[in-house]
Image 1 (cartoon, rainbow, N blue to C red):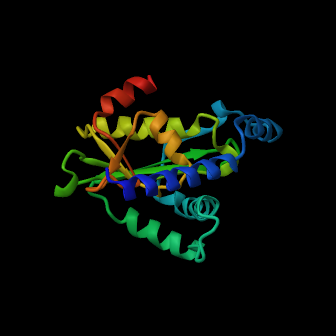
Image 2 (cartoon, rainbow, N blue to C red):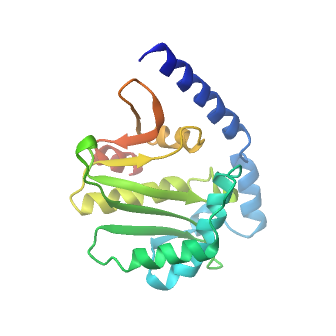
Length: 208
C-alpha cells in the first residue's frame, strides 16, 4: 500500500466513523420497537414473492434515502417498482430476495443475492447484491438474520463464497467486518467499499 492510498483509506475510515456515530443506538431502537409493540423475534424473515413488489419498492426507496441521505438525486417509487418487476421476470434461479416483515405486514428491510461470475474476482461465486434495513430497525440483530439467510441460500445452491460491493464511507462496513467479511483492496491498496466472504461455511457456523 502506497502513502497516497493509506491517506485516502484513513480519510474514508474517519468519514465512516462519523456516519456510524450519527446512527441510532441499539438501546434507542429497542425502545422504539417496544413502543410499537414489537420485538426482534416478532420480525418475520421470509422469501420475497412477486406480490411483494410494491412493498419492496417502498422499503427500497425509504432505506436507500436513509443510507444515502446526502445524495442529490433519490430514486423514486416508480423507478424501484419497475426495477423489481424486471427482476422478478428473471426466473432462472440465478437470484433470490429475502425480506424482513413486521407483525403488521410492513417491510422493514431486505437482502438480495445473485450468482457472480467475473474473472477479475474469480474467488467469489455469489454476490450480496443488496442488503438494507430501515434505520429504526438497525442494531437489533435483524441484519444478521438477513445475512445468515442469504449465506444459507447460497450454500444450498452449492455457492461457497460471496462478495459485496458497497460504499467505502458506509457505516454498515462495521457490520460486515463483525460478520467475518474481509475488505477487498484495489491494486494499489485502496479500499473502495467492497467486502468478501471467501468461505460461507464459516459465516454459516457463526450464524448457528
